[in-house]
Image 1 (spheres, helix red, strand yellow):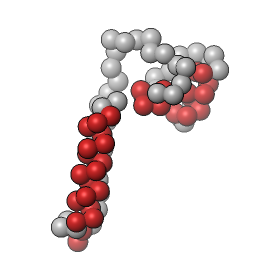
Image 2: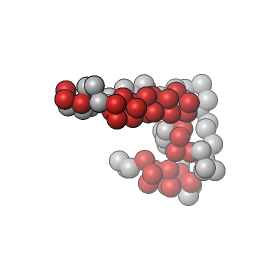
Image 3: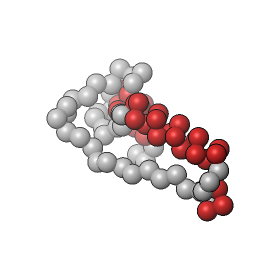
Length: 74
């Protein structure tokens, strides 16, 4: 499958095991079985036009997103 939610639902219904991001399993009965195995690091980028480089809105949004990612550290 190429859809994480569908993969999660399949695992929840007994279809087998899967590699699923931890944040998707927070409210799920799925359990982690390979606790010593970590997935790859995936970079994320905030892209905006150069005209918005000094925008307060963009700066506040960027700070918010960075804070939320640091808080969750899934």
